[in-house]
Length: 423
Image 1: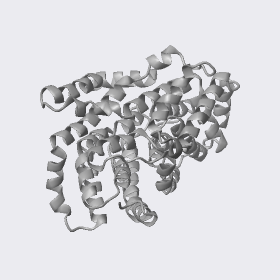
Image 2 (image 1 turned 30 degrees about the horizontal axis):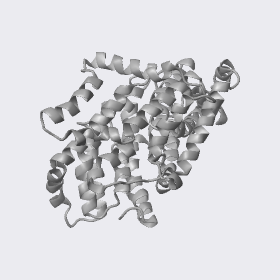
Image 3 (image 1 turned 135 degrees about the vertical axis):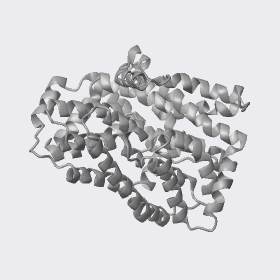
Image 4 (image 1 turned 45 degrees about the vertical axis):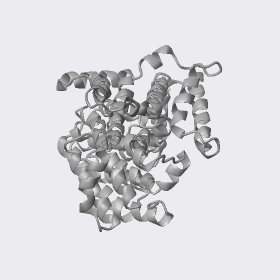
């Protein structure tokens, strides 16, 4: 998307960082040239669906944004819940799920722009109201991944493949095993309505109605994108029959928008895809595959194993959760997953923990942050300047504590009850 490319470019200039894509290209090459790692292992991530999944999702997001389908879904979701302050919060919750179903993992920029535009349109001063709307948009763009299949989970399965082998969950299985997380997702929006109560009544119904009027009736192109989405969902719901990994559907079906009968996509939609994100993800995955090829995962696991030996399952999960929470202050979530998934999977397998549940746990744990810099996707929301640092920290601290309580008192027991926790 143009918005995302510009945002990334500006952040690089602001922080004086080297271009992320350039580094991502050099990393795997350095593994081969300097570390003498086998090229087949270093570049093996490109043989998985993960980089292509990201490209397909970003492409589809471009098409949906250009045809105004993204805005139409978001506006109608908020109007459906009344468009009061609480209505906006719950409307963002609904919009987040719908958009995540269509473009999993690629809803951050559209929802960040929506939250910022809404706060400015309503002339809200920086305070509890803007914090509540922005934080609601943030978790609506990220937390649906806790129960809707996404690229991060695929990334973890790819990183741990050298130890755990193929871990294939269908789209339906992923939803079923993690269905309890839907309750936590809804609970967090309720928390927002309590933490960030507005000082004055807010009613944005007229604003969203006027925005929908500007969009006009749903265009034929929007309907075509919806038809394609229905085809994609049919594919996802039948993975147990056709045996094709769900991730491939997110590149195959969006590309059908170029074919006769649909013919919605333009050359610009593909041109404006942020390919650097796919290259960066593949490079990070390469860290794990290279470590596996060089045997580094076993070395790290051998250091941690004595600490966990003889301990119970809850202690193991608690230790890893604490480790990941601490590492978030030093590394990005993607870096943590890339560097530690392999040794952590070694540990899980040695204790008989189901790797599918373990990967889900890691995905949840890396979301436990306190400060904006820890997770670039949350940083994007904070960077708009409409959330006070104190409000951001307070909300994320509460979310992290509640996540920990939820995981250890509800999620893990739920997994144990349905037979998903252990192999």
